[in-house]
Amino acid sequence: MDPETSPEQEAESPAPLHIDPDDTEGFYDDTDGLYPHVPEADYHASTRASNSVLSKIVERSPAHAKAALESEYDPSSAQRFGTALHSAILTPDLFELEYATKGQCSGIKGDGDRCTYNGKHPWIVEDAETGADVIRWFCSTHEPEPGEEVEAGIATEASDVETISESKMETIRDMQARIFEHPAADMLLEELPGLEELTVLWTHEATGVACKSRVDRLVRHPELGYIAIDLKTTRNAKPGTTPGTFGYDAAKFGYDRQAAFYLEALGQAGVPADYFLILAVEKDAPYSVVPYLVGHENLEKARGEFLEALRTFRQCRQDGRWPHYTESIVALDLPAWRFD
View 1 (cartoon, rainbow, N blue to C red):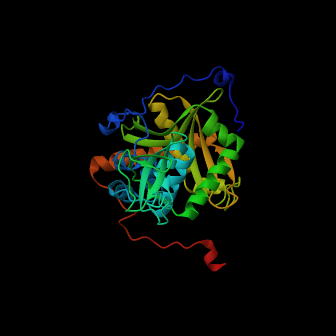
View 2: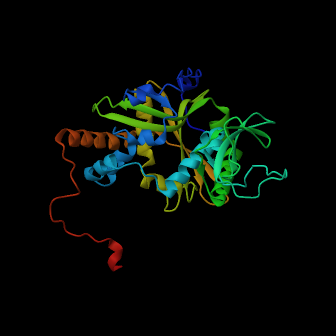
View 3: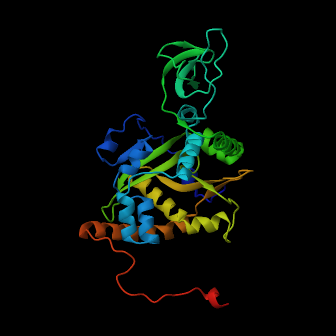
């Protein structure tokens, strides 16, 4: 990471943000502000304009944006995997209590041997040796009561941990390890002070549209100031702009527009973030990692795109009319290669 910076930007480290991570009341009151660790389902339930909804206007039609606004949050298998990976990378301690593969029952039989049945009931257990909370599995016969002594610990409470297959868990562990082996990625995720899963409720000044954004991680860099980081999984993280490279996919999926929108969100919330970094990690071995800093020139161009989408969004809400592609008969265009 070697962006060009001015002497003014390098002059001093930005002041730290003071945000109570447990104070989410304002989010549920729909008040503009910064809110760490809002549950993902609650974030998606908000009907404010988001980058994904505005992207429907840019890439499809206002009707598609309205459908996205009104649809219930029902993540696909790929999205659930992405959420689990985000947890493993951004909040690894929480990940250990939120996701697990099923294991052998931890109960002890009357003869003193460990139960050989598969566990069906996950429990949070305070490990006797380390004092840390861990997930242990129990069969119906040996399911404990809160406070009961179990093998090498004390059962605290039943857990609603999300189960993951062994193969997916292995993939997540491999991706997690590769990311933290990368020097720049490790610095951004581990060494620099920051906030994870930061929800921003904000109002776009020029259009008056109420918006929302969810920043994977906001870090405070000593020279560059605040940097917004977004974790992206990809089939190919290779630098470049030709088909199959990450730059090509970034343009295809509008990652530059997302970057501009998120930086606008942070600015409106009083966070002087000037940089947006995409941490790209491949989904398959060897799980290559590339941190990409979105250039200021690209950000400036993308701002015009989301501004036009916001104006359309505002007009649609005012009129109560969300047009489809067209209401006319359209001539069918075919690509040039059809008759090559």
